[in-house]
Every structure is written in C-alpha cells, then in structure tokens.
Image (cartoon, rainbow, N blue to C red; front, side):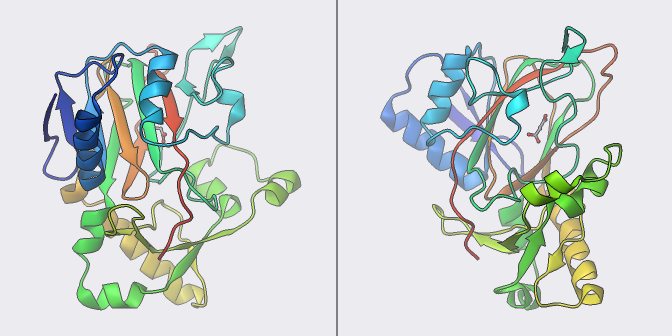
Amino acid sequence: MKLMKLSDAIGIEATSIDLMHPIADSDFQRLYRGWLDSTILLVRGQNLTPEGLISFSRRFGELMVYTRSENAMRSYPEILILSNILREGRPIGAAVSGRYWHTDGHYLETPPAASFLYGAEVPPVGGDTWFANMYSAYDSLAEEMKRRLVGLKVVISRVQSRPYNYPDKPPVTEAERAAWPDMPQPMVRTHPESGRKALYVGGNVPWRIIGMPVEESEPLVTELQRHAIQSRFVHVHRWQPGDLIVWDNRSCLHRATEYDQIHHRRLMYRTTTVGDKPIG
Ligand code: SIN
C-alpha cells in the first residue's frame, strides 16, 4: 500500500490496495493515522460488495444506522443509498442530498465520526463532492478571532435550516418540529483523537450564537462560514466508478454538486461510524 497527498488543501490517497481483502493491522494503522491528519482518504478502483464496504467501514469504528432510514438498503440498514435511479417510479435512495456545505449529523447530540461514500455509478459530468479542511480554516484565523470564539456555541436547528437547504420542500410540519430539537454545538471543536481544533460552523444557515444578540451573531457566523470554504481549503473530487472516500466529520465540511439527473445515473453507497459529543 502506498499513501500520497491528495491535494494541497486536504486528503490522502491510498494506492495498491484492494479493500475486498483484509488489510494488515500495520497498514491499517498508517491509513488511519493519515486519514486523521489529513481528514479525507481516497481509494480508487475498488469493486466493493455491501459486505466489503461494511467490513472496511467497521475498521474505523462501530457503524450507525443513519437518520433517513427510508433510504437505507433493505438487507443492510447500515448502508444509505444516494441515487436518482428509479424502481417502480420512485428513486431507490436519496435523489438529492447534501447540496450545501455541511458536516454530517451536525444537528445530532453525537454526530457521526467517519462517513464513507462509495461510487458504484457516477455521471460523466457533475455530481462531484467538495471537501473543505476545517483544521486549516481554524488554524488560519486571526488570534483575536480564535480568542473570541472560545466557549461560543451555535444553535443547530433543522427547523431553521430547512428553507435554506431545501427551498423546494413544504414548510416544516408540527410533527417534524417536535422531532427535531435544537442542538447547541461548539463553534470550534477539539478533535477527540488528534486533539487539534477545527472550525465547526458549517452550512449556509446563519446559526444563532447562544447569548449573543442576533445583529452580532449573524454577521459573525456568516463571516466564519465564508472563511471556511475559501478555495485554499477546498478539494473538488470528480468521481470515477469504484472510488471510495472516507471523510472525518469532525474536521471537514463537504457538499455535493448537481448533475443531469434526467440523462445520467448516480449510485452511491454510504456508511457512517458512531461519533462523540462535540467538545469545544
Ligand atoms: C452527502 O452529503 O453525504 C452526499 C455527498 C454526495 O452525494 O456527494
């Protein structure tokens, strides 16, 4: 197995490795360490079965069944299907997913640690995934800003984010409102394994900072969100069939781009590992 830098902004790529075969512990330790340090791992040219994806993902930690269970694979509920492919007139998975900058499960008390995305079928153009390095985004803040952010928390609210992220969906219902409690999260997150600090304010939603008037909170959150997605922190991944990417939700943001859903198919399988409660 060889490891090399994926881009100046973020990531490593592992080559000469077949994830359908067991990986020696020493190789896995190198892979895991490289992933923790660089926040995303790419492995190309794989031919993964659902069992293969699950067993590689389990090397990173316990798997969780994600929130949108209607898009889970029937015989493997740990696998979420992201796809526009229709069966009996309905998409077999989430046809539109993650088109805005985010970190998975930001609205959960214990968001997932790692997310794995395996591209089985990908469109020739578009349907890319962008990644932004939140260690670098934090490290590059002015010292004064770092001091200002100490101890600050934002309220992550699925109710507030719905019109920003899904403008085409109907307004939030009373049942959804009841099921989606507000979740206070630190704006700077200390990674539980690396001990490094990462910015944790993803998204395009002007989250409310607890204890701060809205006139002060909104511009601060917006400024940090703009800072976080500068091109120097971003890598654009153009998928090839057989690519697997593992990203660390504790230290990066990601977003998917559009593609021609009428003429092209995209079939992606996703797993996630259980994470920790974010610590500021
Ligand atoms: C996601 O946010 O998990 C979706 C990423 C993608 O489909 O590229």
